[in-house]
Amino acid sequence: MAQTARQEGATAAVQFSKPLTAQPTTIPGLTLFDLNVHGDNRGWFKENWQRQKMTELGMPDFGPVQNNISFNASRGTTRGIHAEPWDKYISVATGSVFGAWVDLRQGSTFGKVFTAVIDPSTAIYVPRGVGNAFQSLEDNTAYTYLVNDHWSAEAQAQYTFLNLADSAVAIDWPISLDEAALSDKDRAHPPLTEVVPMAPTTTLVLGARGQLGRELSRQLADRPGVRALERDDFDLADPAAVGRIDWRRVGTVVNAAAYTAVDEAETEAGGAAAWAANAEGVARLAQACTQHQVTLIHVSTDYVFDGTREGAYAEADPLRPVNAYGTSKAAGDLAVGVVPRHYLLRTSWVIGEGKNFVRTMQSLAERGIAPSVVADQVGRLTFTRDLAEAIIHLRNGDAPYGTYNVTNGGEPGSWAEVARRVYADAGRPSSQITEVSTEEYFAGKSVARRPLNSVLDLAKLEATGFTPRDQWEALEEYLADSRP
Image (cartoon, rainbow, N blue to C red; front, side):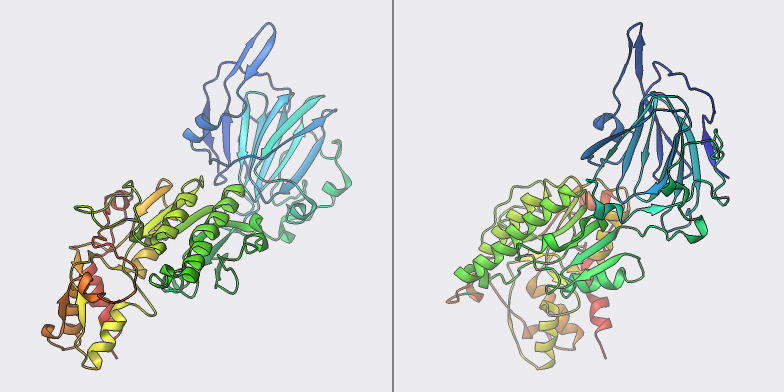
C-alpha cells in the first residue's frame, strides 16, 4: 500500500508563505519538503534549493552538478519509472505533477511506494536507487531536478526500470495510463518480479594486506559491496590508479594504505616514495572523493606531531612533524581535510595481524634474547580490532565528519612497559628488558627522529558513543589469542 501525501488529480494551487519543513516518508532517505513561496500581484518567488537551510533540516549535502528541466506540454504526460545511480532533488517551476517513487534498492523496503503532488511550493529529495516517475496534472508543466553526477550513456546503462502499470506496486495514477501520454520505452519496462534491485554503493578498502586492512576485511566480510584492494589493485603512488575506478559505484573509501618505512623515508629514494604515496597519492584520492561525493575515511598517525607537548594531543593541535614520513602524512592530512565527507583518524602504535612490535618482543622472548627497549617514548597501543570497529562506528553512526584520534584507552605507557608485559606473559623475567633512552638506542645509527609523546586525546571519539578497550587489557587478550 502506497503512502500518499496530498494526492489529488486536480490542478494544485500554489500555497504561499509555508515555513520550510522536511517530512520523512516510508521510503528511507526519500524526503518531502514544503517550500516557502512568496507571492503578490506580480507572481511569486522561492528559494528552490538552499543548501544551508536544507542540510540543517537533514538533507544530505549531496553536491549537485547538473540541472535538468522536463517541459510537459499536455496534462497527463507520464514519465518513468527510473532508478538512477545518483541522488536527485525534484521540484516544479510551473504547473504541478503527481509523483510516484518506488524503492528499487536491495533491502527490506524493496518495492515500497510513496506518492505525492508536487507543485511550486513542494519538492522532494530522491536518494540513489529509488525509482522515480511523474504525471503532469496541468498543461505546460515545467518539472526540474538537480542531480549529483553528470548524465552519460554509460551512466544510463546503470539505470533500474519498473513498469508504470505494475500491479505489485499498484500506483493509483490520477489519469488512467490508457489515456496518458507515455513513451514506448516506458510502456515496455519490466514488472517488479523481473527487476534486479540496484546494489548498494561499494566500499573500497585500500591496503588490504596491511594489519588494519586484514582486520577490516574480516569485520566487513559479511557486508555486501565491500572490495578489499591490495597494492597490485590500487597503488596510491600510481597517478593513474584513481582513473581506473568507476566512481559512480563507490560510496565509501577506507584508506588503510600508506608508505610506512619511517627510517627509509629519510633517504632520497625513500623520501620520494613516501611523498608519492602519502601526500600526492592521498591528494588525488581526496580530489576524486570530493568530485564524486564519496565518503573518505583516511588513517593517519601521531607522527604528524613533534611529540613535545605536555599531555595528550588533541585533534586541533598544530601539525609539526619531525621526520620525512611524518611530513608526508601531514601533507595527506591537509588534502583529506578539504573533502566534504571525510573522517580523518589519527592513531599510534598499531598492533594487529602481521609484523609489529608485540610480535617482535614475543619472538625475542621465545629465543631468550634480552633486548634494550626505549623507555622515553610514551603512548598507547592501537589494536586493529578497535581501530576497525571505530571506523565502522563513525561511518554508520551519526558522528560529524572531521578528524578523530583513535587509539586504545587506559593509562599510557612506554615501549619498555609493553615489552615487560610481553616478556611476563612468556614467563620471562622483566629484568631481561633493559630500559634505554631514544638517544641511546639510536646512537650511531642513521634513523628518523621519533616523537617522544604519542599520547592522543580520545574525548572527541568517546563523545560519539565509542569507547576503545583499555590498552593493557587488549594486550592481554592479544597475547592469549597468540598462545598455542
